[in-house]
Length: 218
Image (cartoon, rainbow, N blue to C red; front, side, top):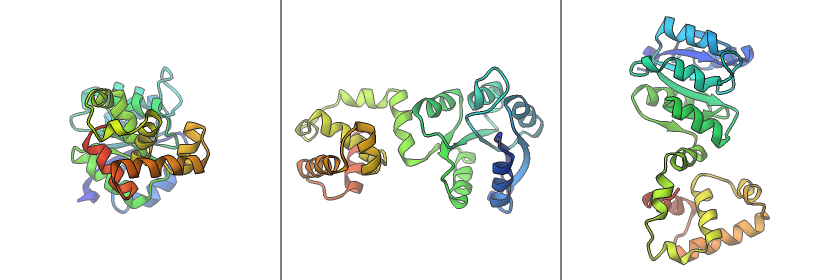
């Protein structure tokens, strides 16, 4: 089925576009490419692809990058889906392109197989995000803020720092990434995680992630 999905690749690096075409071209039908905002809008309107693989940092236009491309094609969103693919995992990049109308955001560390699956999912109407990026979207659209109002006995066992650690672990952060984010040592992070698991009577990061997702506090 994926071979029938028509794709446009938008990225300002020709080597990346060529590599991506090589990796996915036997499973997806690449019908066009573009290297800047203006060319992207033009090729998307000309080809009306099923999915646009879109970098978020692009030259041209008025400086809005990938989000500007999506906004300029808002009238096509019912038939054309946009999937951002970028080296950036910054919250502002993720949120801006999703607010514009993109259906997902993955980083360029994604494997070709995972990318083909993500394209199929977006084409089918699902939203797709690299694991640690979904939390940015939840935060931006108020899910976590609403969840903070829903307190329960288990959550009240955790200190403010432990809640912060728990959220980042549930979003997919490694201990080293979490240590950098919170300016802590890896050993201190490990201690916080152990305390969270003990207080919540959980045995693994997987169980912790599910616990947080069920309470919509990721």
